[in-house]
Length: 411
Image 1 (cartoon, one colour):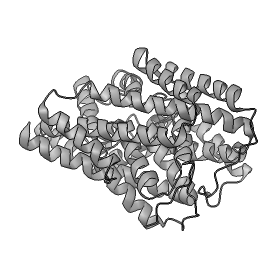
Image 2 (cartoon, helix red, strand yellow):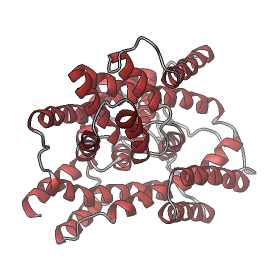
Image 3 (tube, rainbow, N blue to C red):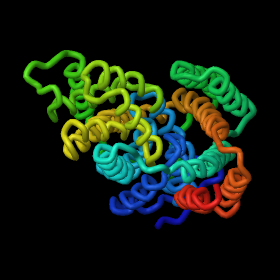
């Protein structure tokens, strides 16, 4: 385990930490994936707590850059952030290991519950435990936004950007508002901070290993564009529910899904229920429910659909197809960002975007808080979780399961 050392600005690790091993990456994200209930922002907050706050593998600003990039790109935001962290630490192999590890626990749970559902027709009740997860998740997200803001926001304009982003998301919301917030924050950052001295990357920031060449990047984008083309243009000869059809359908959709898990649901529903008739409306609702009550991203609902079509092999193919193309795009985009990030203009824009992202994280905590069950235990879990995280620096992966056990006993 590396020693946690941060510089005074919170922008990165003060002294260069030794390389993180792939086994350590796998084990870390496996633990995170097993406890990351509560949606994509909960998973991102746990990643921030473990990889930045506790282990010092990345700086706060590097993490915010990854969140900003993942928000702009298609696919599941949380898994894209995990792939970004793995890439920053160990290059493409680190991205692969991290993304696979964080998905495995939820994949196993979803497939197990899916098998139970198709055999007995119902899913086990987890209501009390899930109700207790919510105040714990809220505490984790609030602590993450607080720590990021304390170390990354350095001026009143940045405070205003964070507050404005939170207000817009809470008051209006939606994917297009999210894009507008990032675009406006970048423009404001460029206008306010672009005239200072040339910004350089933080000393000690993790350097990715073996980045792809320009030819490799071009081939990657060509491959992803070809996948979208195969999805949009009907292919004769593919079986209606074959493995190849599963890969093309979910892989193509993954590159057209912007805005987070719940924004994805209508498009997926239209394709797999109304278009391909792979599942009924009731089965689709069950798939979404399983994605909500298990840890990890809601897009693991794809495993339910794949399982109905081709059993465990179909669940694997659907999961691979829905997560791999966006993660590959994320790593490629991160490499492009690395090549332009030393520009003073880019750093100024990123400074504005980072502030806005912190405001967006605060707004996610408010949204989740509104769904928390009104009960004395909810208040106790939230306050105790917040104190444990901010005062005692407890590992976030312990907060949610302990809250779930309390919920089962006391709710």
